[in-house]
Image 1: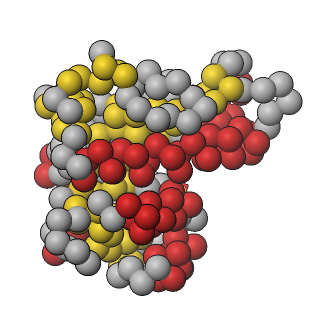
Image 2: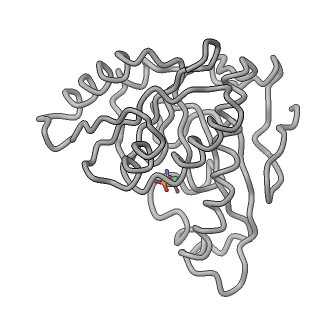
Length: 222
Ligand code: GRF
C-alpha cells in the first residue's frame, strides 16, 4: 500500500459485483486502498472476489448477535480497527442503527439501484416497471438515518425499454452502478467531495444529482 491513498473498508452481503468494480478502480487509479472487505453473510461470492485480489476479508455474521445494536457495535469496532477514512456499503443489505450511522456521518456512502428519491427499499426494478416510468437508474448517496434517503452524490440514468423484465432492467442499471460508485469514491479520495449539513459539495460547490446517463461523467454545478 502506498502512502497517500485513501483507506476504505467495503461492506457487502452477497455477489459483490460493485465490490469488483471498486477493486478494479483501486488497481487502476491508485487513489484509494481497500483495507478490508466485511460481509454479514458467510461464503458469499463477494468474499471470494476480495480474496482473489489479496484483500483482507472478515465475516461478521449478524445471526450470531442478539440485537441490531449489538451487531452494529461489533461491526463498528471491526471497521475502526482498519482505520478507514471512508466506509463503502456495496450491497450491504442491513438496516443500520442511528448510533452507527452518526459515527460515520460524512464518511459512509451507499449505492442504491434507483433514481432516488424514487423507489427506496427493495425490488426497485420491478417497482419501476410496475409504475411505468420511462427512466430508471442508480444513485450513490451519503448515508444518513433515513434508509436510502441521504444526500445524493451522483446518479446514472438508463431508459426503460418496452419488453424489459426486472432482470434485464437490473442488468442495464448495474452496468451504470459499476461506473458511478468508483467515481464517487475517487472524488472523495481526491478530497473533492464533502457532506456539509444536508448538502453535498464537489470542489466546494453544491452539486445536483441530475446526471444524464447512460454513463455519468461529471457532476453539474447547481
Ligand atoms: C446492487 O444493485 C446495489 O445497488 C444494491 O445491491 C446490489 C448489490 O449487487 N444495493 P452486488 O453485490 O454489488 O453485485
